Image 1 (tube, rainbow, N blue to C red):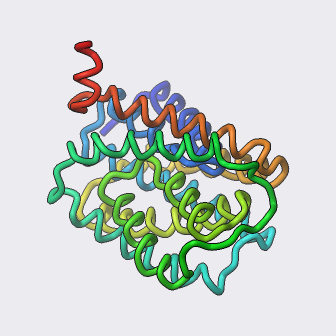
Image 2: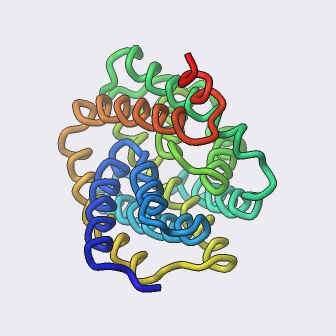
Amino acid sequence: MDIELSTLLLLGAIALFAGFFDAIAGGGGLLTLPALFIAGFGPVLAIATNKFQASSASVSATVAFARKRMIDWKSGRPMAALSFAGGAAGALSVTLLDRAILETSVPLLLIAVAVYFAFTPKLDERQRAAKLSMTCFTLTLVPLIGFYDGIFGPGTGSFFMVAFTLLLGQNILQAVCNSKLLNASCNLGALLVFMLGGAILWPLALTMAACAIVGAQAGARCALHFGPRLIKPLLISVCCLMALRLLFSDGNPIGQWLRHL
């Protein structure tokens, strides 16, 4: 399949911006996936290509955080393994779950995440009391969110982030670093399934991945440098924008009802 140079450059630029924001607050997929659909690519090719560039960006951001020793590998390895398995299971189950259920419920969850971060006490470097044991968190929430990433995807990084802060009591910078590790893991699990079962347009995938890696590296450095001052407002903004994007997408029952008001 031939791709016009202008289309390749435009999608590469979108992937760069998506990688930057995704490294900080998640939500890059809601920039890149619609762009691929608008460019005229079919669903399977678009989803597989998007998952490749998303995996590249999340792995790149994880490496940047790991180099700064911001990831606790002792607790991170088992969580990453279960996140990988959840992502693979979600990708295998992509045709079994009614997507209308996710399209209706996910925007409401994203709005709840934005409200939580908007009204929560000041997010800083302080550690808070955990509300869930690490073992319980690893065995339940991690594979569940990973499964969601494989079967649908938007907001996965934000959901991991709020789970780390709300349930494990981590400060926001720790939550960003750990959520990126788990996001990378479930991305790779889903990507493996999509690669084995679908088609990837490699020239486009590699171009978008390269741009996403550059954006992710820049985003990770900004997150480490500016900390909560940058992360909190971006997270709230990204969650709200993702929720609106999903609410008013074609086929969303809530969006259809709102448009008829």
